[in-house]
Length: 426
Image 1 (cartoon, rainbow, N blue to C red):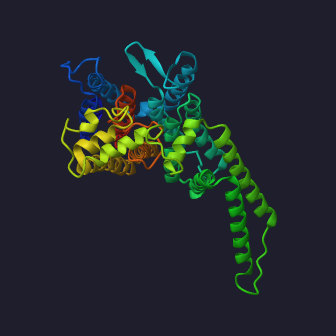
Image 2 (image 1 turned 180 degrees about the vertical axis):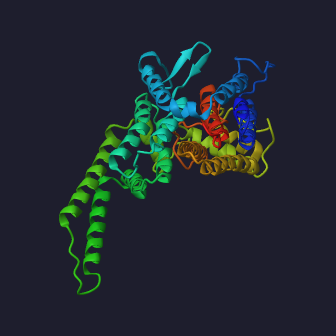
Image 3 (image 1 turned 120 degrees about the vertical axis):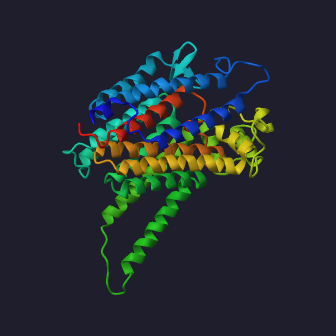
């Protein structure tokens, strides 16, 4: 057993490694297609996007070896330290960070820029796993739930302040993990209601929603009161009025924030998404071009490097957040479906392996990994096909960028290391 532990490749799940390799390689092919020029340039060159990405991919090999070098107890024991260091890296951006596209999210090291928010996800997952796996931790207690929320939303708050709302939204994925560990559906239900009220307020206005809500509550109360004929049901009117007052304050706050706090380009994105405004030449240009590019691919696609819209650079920043549109045009519906299936297989495999862990730490971390992957894929693909607003969330292993690639590599291979050691007696 000890000899097996000294072999860093012993016990690792090769199916996950194979899926990782396929996704990364296929991702690079699409980055190459989206950023290829007519000039004959070496592949391993920082002068092109695909050259940089290939260097980033090569550098994942020593990164993976370093991750596998440490045993599972290292990640469990030092999870809090790694989490604190990651928070410090986010705070440091406000002093040493570089502002790109209006967000101070990067450290600049000459030819290399690092976005710490891409790495913090893994260390937050470790911290959540450490907290929830503590034998003395009772998740049913409100104070313990608050501890978990603080761990999750502290980095989300710091990322929002950069501002990078898209990356901060990813931390909502941890609610899937908390639900798996015993958190009631009340929180998710409440969150869903908040989103519904937010959308309705934007669509129909504050006054309409307030009046409609008042009428619904009144009708429902009268119906329940007289249901059953002679059996009169007494209501606590104070509670009903209090609930309505809280909801009304939220609706009024939403209307005020939307009109006075949100910037115009934020309002434009929501209005384009909800069909209140059509702006295919302005704020909705990227999404519109992306939809056209994907639909032009048909069932089987136009072929590698044969996508005229991709080669004509019709979709801005196509090699990053809109990389899925390259897949849709050149590989068609079949290729796009294959990518989705590969992601589903990876998530299913992670959940399956997580459920085999006797140690709660490994199981909770595995669910964190699967939830983050799920959230990234759903939001990114939904954004590219026009179902969700543009929020700047990359497609794992596909979108251009060393920080994104390395962040997901760390996230995945820490789990692979935890899984490889799950049967070892430490």
